[in-house]
Length: 149
Image (tube, one colour):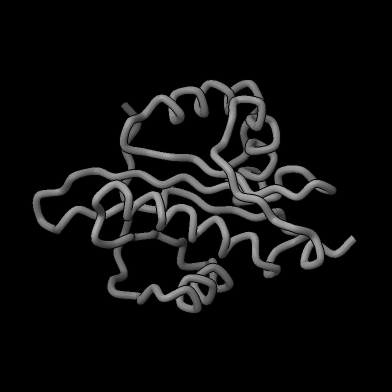
């Protein structure tokens, strides 16, 4: 069945979603096990200034997820950051991503944020077009650095 004909429901993520969120994370390029995702999701759901949402249909179950958080920064007014968003590659470009993005933005507004930020890998051109279509503007290109602790 075509997901565009299925009703998409967005709800807060639950621990029981961990295995499916792990599968979808693999599609995003961040493979992990259901067990590890369960640990991560439990910690994420406990955060006061963050939220995780899933998109689902009755026929397919969970087809996407997003995570949003607020980190008060000194240099800018209060804003939320979209930490991750993925929709199952089999049903992309059919509305679930936009529904997840709207849920994250609604959550951000309720949490006194005046804007949203999202970072997207330079190779994700389809994602860049998605964010532009949804009212985001490309304002900066930067390098990311990481150090194991």
